[in-house]
Image (tube, rainbow, N blue to C red; front, side, top):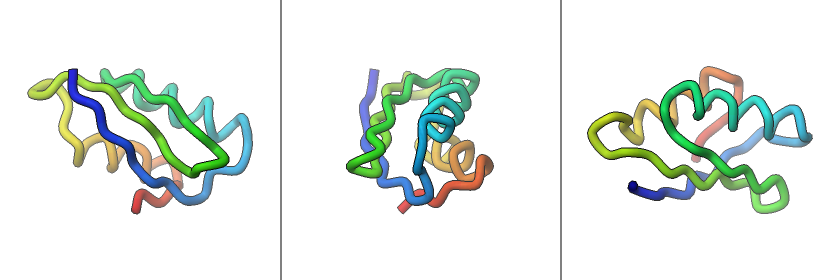
Length: 66
C-alpha cells in the first residue's frame, strides 16, 4: 500500500467528509479526511489506482486539490 496526503480546498462539513471518503472507496482507495487541516490521507494499491485518478475523483466532486 502506498500513502499520500493531499491538500484539498472547499471541504467544510461532515457531508464533505462522507462524499470524499465514499468517492475514494468506490475508486479502490481508502481516504481519511481532516477538515481542520484541509487534508485527505489516501492509502491505495500502486498499479491499481494512480495519484492522478485520485485527484480527478476528488475534483469531480467539486473540491480543489492543491
